[in-house]
Amino acid sequence: MRGMAQGLFKTMLPGVAVTAGSSFRVEYYIEQGEAISSFTAPDFYPFRLVEGPDIHKGQQQVRNYVFTLEAPVPGHYIIRGASVTINGKTVRSNDQPLQVIAAGKTLAAPGAAAPVSEYYLKPGENIQEKIKRNLFLKLETDKRSCYVGEPVLATFKLYSRLESRSDIIRNPGFYGFTVYDMIGLNDHLQVSEMVDGKEFDVHVIRKVQLYPLQAGRFTIDPMELRNQVEFSTTLNRKTQQTIAEGLQDQEPSAEARAGTETVEAMIHSAAVTVDVKPLPDKNKPDDFNGAVGRFSLETALEKKQVASNEAGFLTITLHGKGNFTQLAAPVIQWPAGMEGFTATVTDSLDKGSHPLGGKRVFRYGFTAAPGRYQLPVIRFSYFNTDSNRYSTVAGRLPEITISNAVHQNRIQEVQQESITAKSERKSRVALLVVILLVLAVLAFWTFRKKPVVADKPAPVPVRSTVDELLAGAVLQLNGEEAVFYRELHQALWSFIDQAFDLRGTSRNKEAVLKALEHKQVEPEFVSRMAALFTACETGMYTQATALHNREWLLHEAQDVAVQLEKKLF
Image 1 (tube, rainbow, N blue to C red):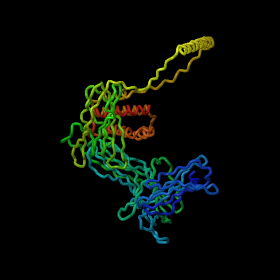
Image 2: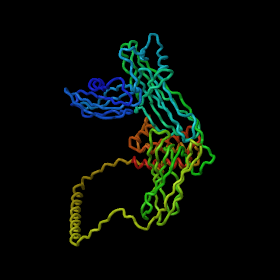
Image 3: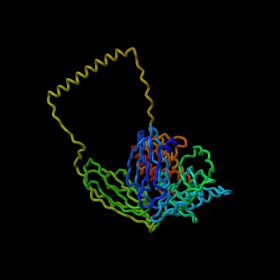
Image 4: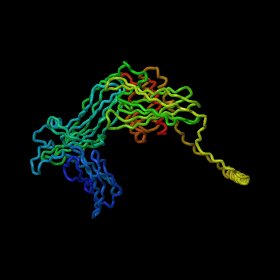
């Protein structure tokens, strides 16, 4: 089908370069248009879609899909191919490279001598040295030392001046950190950078925020790529770079074309060590629970007066920037006579903000006996890395009144039945009973000599409760630390095994998180589950100081499992 896609379905651009901020057209040309049952456009990010698609039907079963885009900042980009279904089979058009130049800048005049490309292999030139100079992978971090809860921005970038196809065969582990992804391979972010006076095409493979869970020295492992690099002994042209992931089990590409030479090269980023400092004990508030950043707080009651049999709700909203994915619900000291329940959490975060910005809303349900109640001031403490000091914000709630009234959950309709209606109903019931008795006697005599052995129902798998799964960790709450983390880790896996059929090499943390996302579980619970796995792995395999005590981790595991149980079973 690849040959068919190239022959019948292609991506067309107006030229090799456009000016930043200007509009241009992308055209997807398709033959056999009458056989098309669907068309799917690609993600044009970072280009802005101005208009489209405009669909033009020509003669001889030709169809064109035209989009108008606005070019972003100068650099080298890839316009991705679209997908169509032709005769029941999905095909994809080719990708097209596009250069965006600054306003006022022009390309070299036609006929001018082109600079020698690195695609051209000179006679006697050392291939491995040429690859080493022109293809490398870097991990950039914005800091090498931070406090617990303070984010480290890590960016994996591939620099290339070669014709290469790269496959990610090893992704780094981020042990000791909660990970928040900002940019991934599917974002197709490509820019240009100058290195030692040479212009490189730079592909941002992955950009993440790493939030350390505890103090210690942690290493960000290398990312490793396998590359098939092509050189030509006769042709001089602009090189292209493509990157994929998970293709290591596929066969290498076909034999090199005439006049070209293809070699395989392995490259990797350097490991980076991050020193995570413990938060200072001096002036640490008693209610501090690991929040790092800058925050403000809002408190509100959904209703100031609640009926005696009705649940009330209050919300605590945290705004700002910081380690939102690690924030635990503030503890509320409920007055005597009131009973509060575990808070539900809702996030609204800006993916591109560093540190994470936005808000997290905690919604608490409560019940109480009739009376008037005054909740204490809600306080939230955090460590501000700008000033290296602790701060506390507070919010007050109005008085709550629980009335003696009974809340009506539904409207009850009472209808008076006449004596005649009641009699008719009783007659119908009596007649139905007689018919059922007759049928029962007939069935008895019919099947008396032909007993039917019912199929034994298949046993229903018994699913353990959350409390049963966590029992081992509870017993080790005051025991040896490594044993506690091992029991908690096993409990988490037992819970996951009840929800998903993950076996062999597919039984890993990344597969769990993808399975949760596939089930459309909210990102908040996916992040909390990832943090629990990371905390257990760190406790089992490192000597780092834990950020949260065991009671908190056990409570967090129970809350996450209970919430996921409602969504998965």
